Length: 288
Image 1 (cartoon, rainbow, N blue to C red):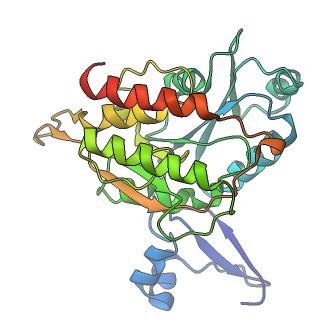
Image 2: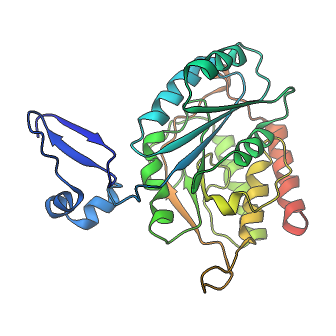
């Protein structure tokens, strides 16, 4: 195909050749590429009524926010985009207030004082209405084009929660050795308490069935969100419905690419957040 465009119709993707108005449907793509190849590429049937709620905590991200929203909008799936401004000081709040009147597809909420990423995510989760909810940072470190692969295990009925991982096969920017070591240590300690075998507990990309993330009570205001939500989903039980017995969450992990920032580019997490994460791992292993 010399020129190709994709659009979300009844199935995940259709392809239309330049000058040819007849689209190739999902079944035709499967016959062309094979089902196994299609699934690896994230080409699979998506229910037409599915909505993905994308929760984006925002703090001083005026420089990157327009681009990340553009990238999220470009993902070919029905979306609810929720932006939670955590009392930004760089002009982000003024920009969002302009967007409220010009961009009605955005759900925008504000904190009157800075509380932290965890608090912003709690606000966003409260307003999520889609069947699936994903966390998206506003700093361009993570690529929204990977959504379709990340939500695939949930759509196919195999998972209730999906974690991305920066350490199992995808490309990533080479940055700080000690950050990487700290992430792996925190993940190892978290796994010891939760009995999960994650490789990247601190990753941004976490995907939930809405009933899971709205069914856990979260308290951490800053980056303690990561170990807290991990501990709580590890013991969360899906309720019994339609003859299905109650059961624990099924957690999947999938590789994601990572284009990390350094501190000159606006990276916010520091050593104090690592200490807080240690505290949260131990605390939420034993108590809510």
